Each structure stands twice: as structure tokens, then as C-alpha cells.
Length: 153
Image 1 (tube, rainbow, N blue to C red):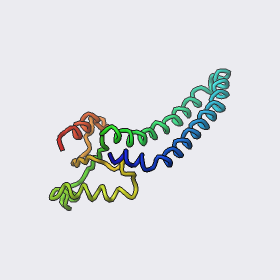
Image 2: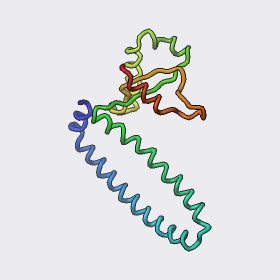
Image 3: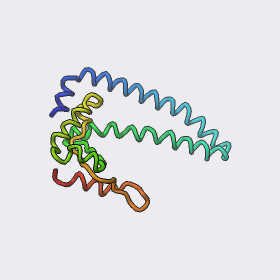
Image 4: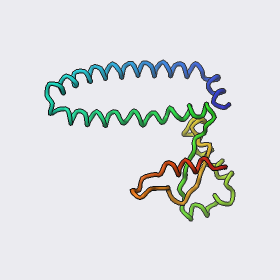
């Protein structure tokens, strides 16, 4: 409900931001066409340029996909899903008070994040672990991370 109230109270500001976003998208697509079409023609004419140009393009295309995570935060908040935070605390940090009063500590973390994040972006679920679940190749195991948040609070 907090998100809906925010939207209703700030609809004019959100509309301005939406129009700015649409303008930026149109500008980006226009620039992509101006750069991409000549590069494509150049690659077709000079095959040896394909590898370096496509390598650079792959790197450049990765950056916007990371930004999409920012869109997920308010979207998931609107449909009732919250954001989770996974904290890896060592024994010293755990002894400083988290174990004694879990809810008070989570409230303090939320309060500390509010100056930097919009209310919809503040984590709703907190999980504390001794270490990040990783596989034999030292990569995060997303299935185990999901299980942490599917357990009952």
C-alpha cells in the first residue's frame, strides 16, 4: 500500500520522470542506429573487424542489463514481493547484538537505509548467514539463496 500512496501523491513528478525516460530511450535508439548501421556495413566489408567490434559491443550491451535490476525493485514491490537482503556476518558481528534482538536490529538497518533508498527499495526480508552458499567453482548457488527466502520468517 505504501507504494500506491507514493504514486498517487507524486503522480506529476513520476509523469515528468517517465517523459524524460522516454526521451532518453528515443535518443539512445537514434544513436544506436547512427552508430550500429555504419559499423555493421563496415564489418560486412572488412571481416577482420568483426571480432573486436562485436567484443566491444558485448561489453557495452552488458551495462544496461545490470540497470534493469533497478526496475525490478518497484515492480516486485507493487505485486507484493519484497526485496531481500542477505548479510554474511562473522561471529564478532553476531555477538554485537543481532542474535539477542533480531527484529530491533532489522528495524535499525531499515532506518539506516532510508536516507539513501526510496521506501520501496528498502529490504523487506533479512537473512543472516555465516557464509555465502557457493558451489565447487566458488560461484553463488542461487537455488540455495532462494531457499533462504522461501523459509518462514
